[in-house]
Every structure is written in structure tokens, then in C-alpha cells.
Image (cartoon, rainbow, N blue to C red):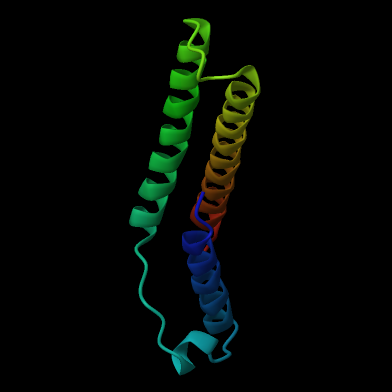
Length: 107
């Protein structure tokens, strides 16, 4: 998974936090390229999907007896796909929790 999108998202969250606290954000002093959250989220989901499809294809090739695919590569690929999916689920859980907190905030 690419960490560039996550780093940019983290930077935006920090600047929003600084603005909420009444401090000038560091991003106001230096221009950073704007990143669309939906695009970052979609590309991350696409990467997880790609990892899962690759691991399933490797598993299928190994089961069919393809000599070019060994068991170690299949197992590593399956674990990478599982870990990336678990990470995505945890990020989703954090986003849902943050959304619920925001919705429960009284103005």
C-alpha cells in the first residue's frame, strides 16, 4: 500500500486540528497539493483488491500444479492480502467511529 496518500491525509488532519485550536496551520505557509479523500480511499481499496486477486490467482496456480509457483510465495501473498484487508477494515472502523462522534457532537 502507498503511504503517500496516508501521509497527506494525516497532514490535512493536523492542519485542521491546528485551525480548530486557533493556531495558524503549517500548510498555510507552504502550499501543498490538494488531495481528494475519495480518490485516496478508492486507490487504497483498489490496491487491497488487487492484492487479494493476485494471491487467489497464485493459490489457484499452485493447486493446479504450476511448477513456476512455489508454496512460500503463495503463503506470503495470502498473508499480505489478509494483512492489507485487516488494515483496511480497521481504518474503516476508525472512520465510522469518528463519524459517529461528529454526529453526536452538540453544536
